[in-house]
Amino acid sequence: MEGRALSVSAPRVSAPVVGGRRRRLVVRRVRSLGPRTGHRAGFGAPGRHGHGSRRAFAPAPKANFLEDLTKMFKGDPSEACRKRYEQKLDRINALESYMKGLSDEQLRGKTEELRGRVMKNAGEGDGPVDQKAVFTDDIVCEAFALVREGALRAIGLRPFDCQVIGGLVLHEGEIAEMGTGEGKTLVSVAPAFLNALCGRGVHVVTVNDYLARRDAEWVGRVHTFLGLQVGLVQSGGAGLVGGQIAQAAEGESVDPEIKRQAYRADITYVTNS
Image (cartoon, rainbow, N blue to C red):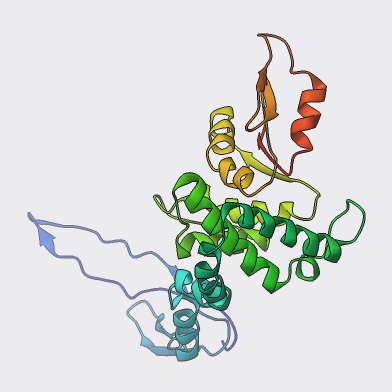
């Protein structure tokens, strides 16, 4: 019987007498779901019907399997993510006092300086770029520190550490999952700014026209404050933030040239439809 799964029949069970009648109990056959190797089967003395009572001895669970499960689910994913970006976060925080000492014009000058360094690394053309080669750690940390100070001055909000980490995650092309109230809208501002510096345009996609316009006119002010151009494209409307947003009449489309202008902006807020 070695190496086979067993079908085990339980011995007959006597049922108690209830109300003068013996209630019949049915015991179903059970198929062992244990591993196909390592089983021992023991057979007792023949029963009243000449059949041996069968007993199957399942192997005890392996300790290393339980240890592997424990290791798999052990620890806080948020803490692991924080440790992964801790070094960059420390550098960004260390630059905060330096950015605070710059005037508004000097902050915009810092944008142009970063743009020059990024475009030099990216080279000519409008195709995909090597993220690690173009956006070095120095550039990433300076850009995030610049956006943090720009957000504080433009809209009165300073991105918290968790929002900075979320932005670093997005910049690396991964998904940043954040809880309610952690400020997801502000998270995208720094990575959008950083990636717009190479001159290839960034699209921030939202789920409806309301959110596209709200984000463009709200957090888009951080980008315009730092010297970037922000566009908005929605159903029935398009234009540049800070200028006139053209609205098409009902049943008509926005002038294609206005749409092209919005798409040519450094950062464009659009919907996914």
